[in-house]
Length: 341
Image (tube, rainbow, N blue to C red; front, side, top):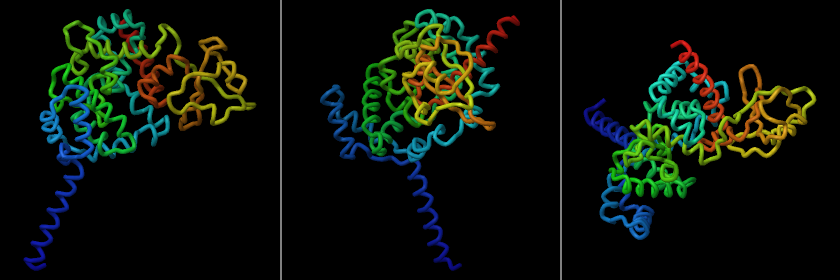
């Protein structure tokens, strides 16, 4: 290879490398984007923001290709239940859940008293979402929401709304919008609240004047419990039961709930369709049908109101079942540890 060819090859390699870097993380100069200008004008006119400050802020925002890639392939769309389950129901996550419960028992007990939500559910949600606050996300929330608001047309309206809520909460809570980190979808804190959920459900549970769901365990736990209460959690009511399917069944795919479904049919209806077994509720109770794929075959579960409430946190039924089953493992281990003391 001649020296000229080497120089050309080197230049092409450098250019290719730069393009790869830019595709994964590029300063977008969003303050010059027409859609961003419309958004900025709206924030100025309707929410009393300063245009120069917002333009400066958006000039520092980075568009992340990794965010666009991640939101296009959520885990629950590509995994069977037996694959999805093993991600969350691990001995380490159970043990850490017991530890988290023990370390925050006073807060959790008080949240149960105030909101009526089962302690194990609060713990399991935080365990699934952020491994008890240890994995809250590495993306700047401002980057995540801006990327999805202006570069993801499929859901741009939703994420522009979330970006609006995020900027308003940063103003109210007096923090730098570029300082907060979260998930690729802009979810924040121990319980991974999106901005609108923070505005609606985050609480100052310890009364210190701040709603800190990032580092304040009291606020994070209280906010999760408040979310469940507001979405209709019923104290001491069952969540789900596993049943069997007999040979003379009329179950169809239309009977199955794949994402968040409000219970409409009764337990009796499902029994008439071929499910059999003892349930923890009356036959008149409204329920949904969950069909979960194990390696050995299908499992049939009925979910009740409280299962539906879990699914309001994340619409995936796989997620909701993972939270429930993790909660039961943590509860059993926690009670065993209490007896052993």
